[in-house]
Each structure stands twice: as structure tokens, then as C-alpha cells.
Amino acid sequence: MFNLLEELDELKQIGVYDEATIFFTADHGEQFLEHGRTSHPSQCYDEQLRVPLIIKDKDCKVRKVEEIVSLLDIAPTIIEFAGINKKIKTFYGQSLYPLLNPQKNKKYEEKPVISFTTH
Image (tube, rainbow, N blue to C red):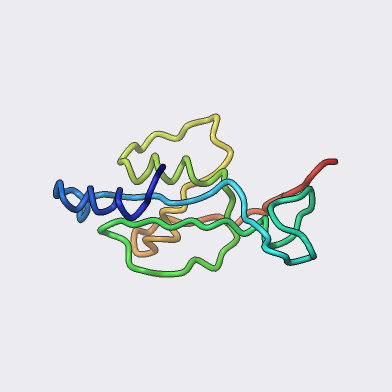
């Protein structure tokens, strides 16, 4: 079974934690008895739409991003953090790097985020 704390400890033990960039996220949120239900039924409540995204990077200051972003933004963000400067045409999202490093003179263009469900 995956244990996040053990994995982070392993990175520290082998001496790469301080320089590592780590992304922690999920594909959806959960509801725990909100609206009388548990898990993630076919409804678009805030509890399912708000997904954690935690990025640990040596160059980023700790901050909470208030802008509404999309899961589609995660892949372009990872690509930019990896130092790949090519725009990938098949990505619909945009890098979140400008939100995390506002002093870098890049701009994040806030766009509508659409969520839906089907029965």
C-alpha cells in the first residue's frame, strides 16, 4: 500500500527531497455526509469539484491560490516545472507556474472551468 509519508521520508533519506518538485493531487473530491451522501455520486457539488493540488518546489513560496483552475492545467504545469519550454498543442490547459511564481513576468489567463455529470 502507498504511504505518502514513508515515500517522502525515503526521498529525504536518499538526499533528494530538498531539490525535488513534488505534485500531490486527486481526480475528484469527496463528500462525507454532505447532502446526505458519501463518496462521489453523479452530482456536481462543491465537495466533488474542489480537488487538492499541493506542489512542493524549492523555488515556490507557500501560498494558497485563489484562482479557479482546472485539472487540465496539471500536465502543462509539470512540463514547465521540468524545464521543458515547448508548448504542447494537445494540452487544453495552461501552466499554473505564473500563479506560483508571480515574479517571473508570466501571466496566467483565468478561463472558465466547466464541470458536468451524466446519469
